[in-house]
Amino acid sequence: YAQDGVERKRLAAALRRVYDDPYNTANPNAKEKPKDVVEREQKLLEHGMAEATMRRGSFIVDIKRRSLSYPGEQFARYDDAGLVAEAMVRLGADVVFVNVDYQSYGGDLSELKSAVKAVRGVNDQAAVVMKDIVVDEIQLGLAKDAGADGIVLIAGVLGPALENFLNLATIIGLETIVECHTRNEVQAALDALAQNIMVSNRDRITGELYPEQAIKLAGMFPGSGGPIVTIAGGGVETTEEMKKLLAVGYDGVVVGKTVMGSARAPEFIRSVRDRTLLPAEFSQWGLDDVEFDMDGNIMSGPKRNIPDASDNNAFS
Image (tube, rainbow, N blue to C red; front, side):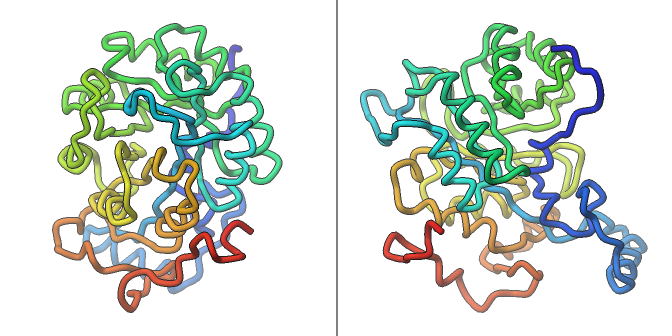
């Protein structure tokens, strides 16, 4: 599995949605910036606000049939996670998590391989991530062998071994997302130079949900466009909760149970992707209820015309 060269970082690019920014240098199809864009950036630089540009939030779907957080409850029934992953990506999901722990989440490695194949067939920019309770280095090799773009590492599970797992993943060319819940876990991930960090509202040890945990820890990360990609999730049940997480600076939101086996998936995905976000530095300005379209213009009122299950084009 030794990495022979510099591999494409599909996961980080998907989480930051660089392919949707025609002027982002990380976009392989980047265009030359027009004069007005260059002038605007120069003015921001002169005023010390070079990073104060509008952001694009990403949507991450956590594909699973059941969860340790809901013992005995089966909230999704499907034959193949690959079909679900393909459907979600067609709807606009940027990243899909595929759970491979059968006892806990109802998935396995064969479904991860199926998901990779299905997603690559419809979108070369979306990323597929293996989600498991990783405790052995061999699991990194299994994710790489299945073709996954990345793997989730849980800081609370790996403890002091986190840095070693991050280093090994880098060696074999596998991107990582470090899941954290507490301030100490976030600090450990930062100290280990993790590039992608997910703050979960759910305590993995007790199983309890703390709805405001990710918001409380948002201030530990650099501002907009910083070197660390941050996402949040855990018990997200409404689009308003998603918007709040994005407003405080997170680059993306993870949603699982709420959209699994539900017709609300298009609503959740479009409420993230059909708008731009203010820079994280403006999160304390009391502008949480102001929404902007994809061109950065203020939208007239709350988001409207979001398709529901009765919309024939919802799943096109």
